[in-house]
Image (cartoon, rainbow, N blue to C red; front, side, top):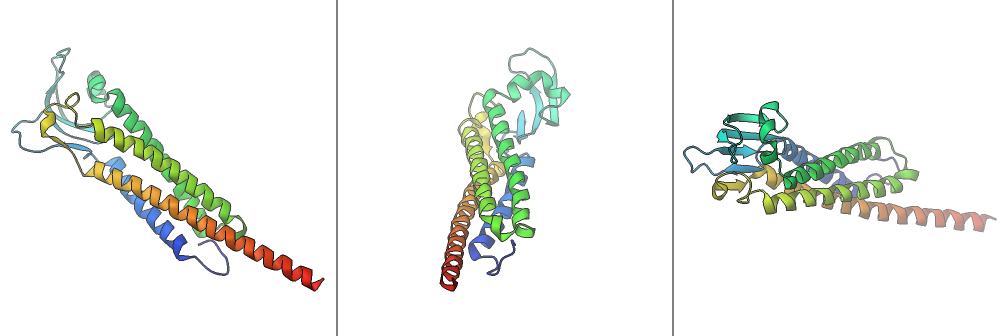
Length: 217
């Protein structure tokens, strides 16, 4: 932890632990394929599951019948085989979800770098600025995550997207994205509190030093 005489406060430890736990949750949500799934009650579902970056389909055909091709298997969303139905797989709302959750993920990576600096090598004199920067970074990340999960939660299992919508449900990867977003808000709040506490300590220390110098003179 940043080096100073009092050691790491309980709030600082809680902020760091909360943030790294949140990072693990968001990484899993970002990389897994269970944002939306079929409930398993259909014998031959056309749609199996999807994540932000992969779609799993079975004997799936273009609903507008522009192509006679049948699509099978789990593929990356930008895979060449699925390119001809990209308009169906990635409607504007889903592109927005991908964009905002990717921004959330990238800001989280910035937060990881900043937190490691705080834990390993940042000096006491500069830590308040770093704590505030971390808090704002994670707040913006949480805001981006909020837009992503609200958008997907509202439109992800709608009748206008994947087939057999009544048999589809928001699954555990989406749940982790929601939990991770709340975790970012919590971590940001803890970093803000710690920054305020350390700023007060710094002011008190400065005031005491000034008072001592005046009395010596």
